[in-house]
Image (cartoon, rainbow, N blue to C red; front, top):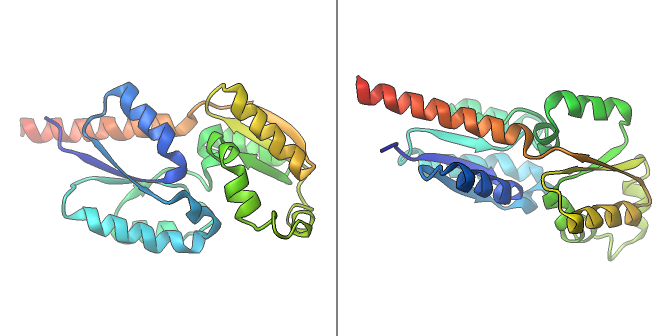
Length: 208
């Protein structure tokens, strides 16, 4: 039996990681999520992440962090160097969902792009409208989004209801809309590689 593997992840990835775990029967993968609302306060993520890593270090030989840099300005990486833990590649979840090359292409096409994932489209009102107090101070919308030209929805699923929510978000912001279907992108491939390394390590230990 494989030893358990702990993945500490952003709550914004919970649905996708849970689906990948179920589809691939990764029963040995244990999950812990940090509040997705931390994305509105990225300066708090490194400390919260380090506390979670230290909490689980005594119980798991292998820990992986399902975060990108997420606006922490290298703060997450400094913690992970100290703790000797790996994370997902890229600056944002948009990059690993789209793939690094495709995301770079999207940025080059239009720097003023506001990105949505399935999670952000579903929770746009709570995380963006309420999170930035645009419901209370509508004048802030023009100020905060004046340099944006378009909304790019990077979808994980082909769900017409979520697509409609993404389109409504673009309309609310007064921006052009573009939809790029990505699936789970490098989130899936990275976790698959992680599991393979974990399997190989455990098999080596059993044979040694």
